[in-house]
Length: 460
Ligand code: PHE
Image 1 (tube, rainbow, N blue to C red):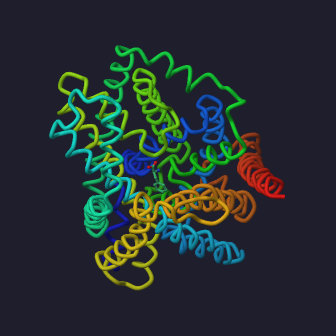
Image 2 (image 1 turned 120 degrees about the vertical axis):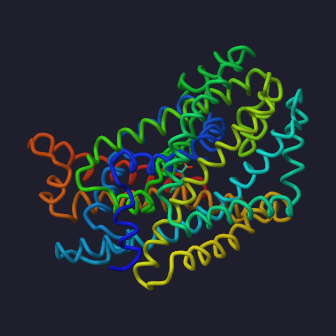
Image 3 (image 1 turned 90 degrees about the horizontal axis):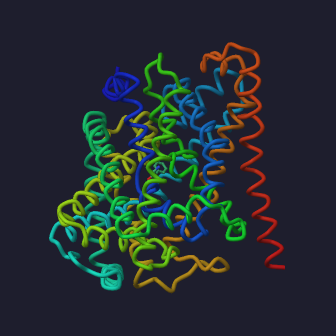
């Protein structure tokens, strides 16, 4: 037996460790950095509602499907899909979903690590007390000054990339488990402290109204697609990351229960982060639609004005960096698993190659905020960073998720799926099949079509 197989087959020794690993993948920059700023850009409440609906009717069924495919195929996503299609006499072309996932992983990791680099720099900035007593204006300016210096951004991006590749190369388990077990509850507590600041500073009620009182006039067509894409992004779905982790799930793990646990954890953390950040926004009369810099402006202002803020602020960014690290590790897993099973090259060498490719791509994202700020993708007005972010979130992840639902709903024999999920009652079998075979794919398909038609008519 090859080294990798032995190493991976005992990867998750029980269901709790699998939940930790999958939650570590799901909870990351998507929750703390991205969700608040896209909710802010898309008008709040109505967007949040669509996002929650997407999690429930699309995210959860796709997560169950991914874990199950991994568990049934017991290999990298590409190989797992090949194994399953051969075993059940189906077209091996379905493995294209696995290849798409590997590609998507490279694209996501390249820009994800750039933002994670910003977080790393902010650990230092907060621990040194740079923002104590600072007002929102100067904190915002400090962020812009940082982004405008390509070398600084490149440095922190490279640091995060090296750390990620180091852990990816070593193989994950132990460190990952410890990291998630302690840092996730700690993030939770610090978010509560920030909410406490919001209540004290007087922005909390407005924040809750902004996030939970749907104003449908503020929701655009693109907002619906963004909410859909984010449901995939935040749950790590549509590119095989969770499928790759699912390949090492012990046989007796209940896929349904683990999925619900992960989805609830992930959603609660995102909502808490949103509540905390908008409370700071409203308490300081900031703009909710400030874009990707929102986290880096609001949180330092709050900690800068809290007792013990230097320590707790530094700790907050440290924990966010750890959450980003456990997600980044999982983004590379489909590629790592695929190349190591094919080429029998060591995990370390593959990790370095992945790191170099993502680093080169990432330089484009680093420059998007300064030297290349005016270089835009024709027609869409996206920078290099925006393009990778949007193409993965708005197209590749939902498409991957759609295909995964189709595979589980229509390609695999139904009996195999029911058995694997332990669905015995015919009513439940039917309900599950209608959801994964029809509702989930149709919902994704409709959002795509409406968006495409809208784009076409808008440009006519
Ligand atoms: N879910 C992660 C986050 O919210 C990002 C991620 C996307 C991880 C895709 C794996 C796959 O930060």
